[in-house]
Amino acid sequence: MNRNDQMGPMLTILLGGACAVVIVGGVKIAAPLLNNIFLAWLLANSITPFPKWLMRRRCPQTAAVLVTLFVVVVGGLVMASLFGLSISGLDDKLPVYQARLTEIFGSFKNLSFMKGVDIETLKSLDMLSPAKLIEYARMLLGGLGGLLGNVLLILFLVAILLFEFAGKGDGDTGEKGSKGVILNRFLEASRDVKTYVAITGATGFMQAAANTILLACLGVDFPITWGILFFFCNFIPAFGFLIALIPPALIAYLESGWKVAVAVVIGYVVVNFIGDNIIKPRFMKKGLDISILAIVLSLLFWGWVLGPIGTILAVPLTLTVRNLIGHYSQKNPQPLD
Image (cartoon, rainbow, N blue to C red; front, side, top):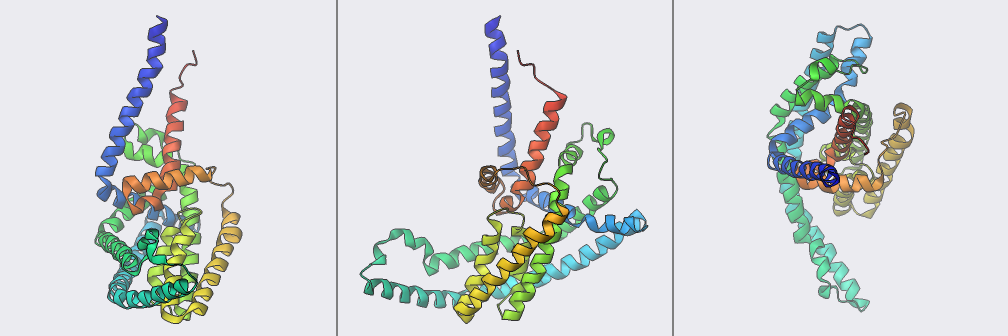
């Protein structure tokens, strides 16, 4: 009898682990489709404060959502077109950047040789060679180009989710309509995450706009591309800022020298400091309640499951899954004995 009592929890853990492996495998296989859904969910949560702001000013719900949809669709198509042109222009200029990188890399090798260091023997530097860097850039541009091909689908999903989000108040738990419906349970579990996503999206948009203007004033190529990159990287805590900073700073150095590159770095640091330490704390009353280790592990896990987009969605998805598990545990408490 005692043996059976001990095997019960063990069997439950094994079955739960097996189910988790199957689910993760299915999500990884369906990543190309799920990425569009999750990205639309992220964007819809970021945009939701606008129709709610209109409704607080006595604008009817339908009119508020339609106005928001019009702004989103027109603005999204314009931004997608400009982004596509930027990616095309950036791809055309990659050979120029590669030639400049080769020149800089050659000067660095000559300088190190004069100092008595032969970097040719350092195989670990091969991944930082100009050819490798350009190869990484082409892979990134290819992924962004594939994402642009799904703009209409993402905008359609954003429209549907906007109607869903705008129709429910912040305190609406959605219990009655969520029974047996996976999507509604997901939305219910992500209710606490919506505030984080909305505030991060709003501050990220303002910071991205400021950085785009800064890059345009400094004459850095493709400022819109780097502004959009900053907006999405803003959802990656701790590491997103560096990911968004390196490409425009490197482009500025290759085009105009170290002074412009330093100006880009200083401008980004100032804008990021104002957004993260002055603007965001005024609206976000509580933190993420998630450790740095959990953030790193979530970035690795969701990046492996969903690809590069998974790093952008890592924290919101991790918080949502945690809420789902907590919600299920409260409804189905397990006996301690």
